[in-house]
Amino acid sequence: MPEQSNDYRVVVFGAVGVGKSSLVLRFVRGSFRETYVPTIEDTYRQGISCDKSICTLQITDTTGSHQFPAMQRLSISKGHAFILVYSVTSRQSMEDLQPIFEQICQIKEDIRKIPIMLVGNKSDESQRELDASEGQALASKWKCSFMETSAKMNYNVQELFQELLNLEKRRTVSLQVDGKKSKQQKKKDKLQGKCSVM
Image 1 (cartoon, rainbow, N blue to C red):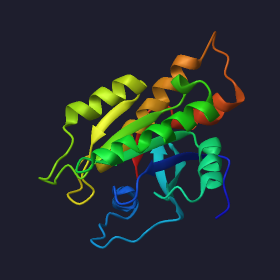
Image 2: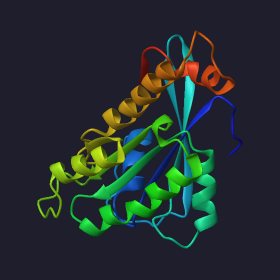
Image 3: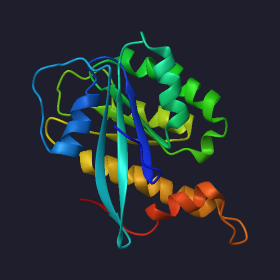
Image 4: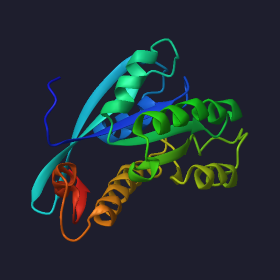
């Protein structure tokens, strides 16, 4: 799929089976798939309305496997924002995010400039291994935002992507110095103002 310069690239990471693809498909297509289908890497586009113009979210749904480290590094280097997903039913899935977060920090250098959402998915499940407070504590440690979701019940899915855009808008505004904008900030101006999913 050809990449457009005004695409805002969001990369979704997480262990196998945490529901990354389910979150993305629920957001983009409004559907939920009951059966598990492993992903190598899929990219989706979703239009959003920002102040009278249209922007495009390019969402990369990555593999949960560690078999493709070069693809992971490339996704991080090209990404504008990141969603790090774990399952509330698996403590290990949260621990698996640590090396991914560290790699984002290493590649992107100033992590304060990068919108990141830590997401506890499968909040509808009763067999929890993790409370929301544990996700919030990790998000505080990483200085990122946190949200629990359920792709199955369509809980907080739209809100997740909307909050990611809000983080980007706040970041862009805070980076402007003396009214001057960098080339990258000018690109991001399309996300300024009110944005809504189309």
